[in-house]
Image (cartoon, rainbow, N blue to C red; front, side, top):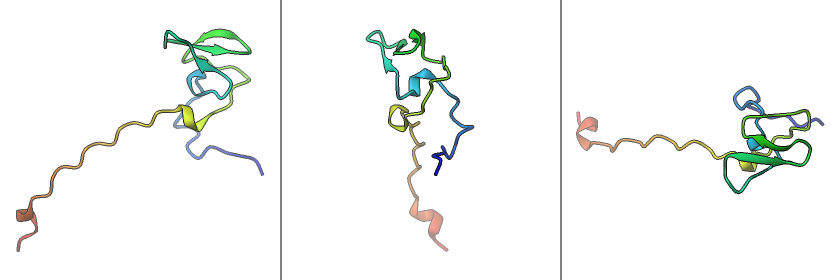
Length: 72
């Protein structure tokens, strides 16, 4: 069975999320075994998405509940 990413269109391919590349010490580039040093937004044919490399966005804080809103 072929593996598919559920939100494929939501996350465009970037070397920043590639399973083969790793972040350079300067934090601005990616070290790719195929292409060498590339930008974080770059992607090539060897791109393979790694779920664990993507840092999720922080969820918005829920405002505090006021008990007066639930009184009749």
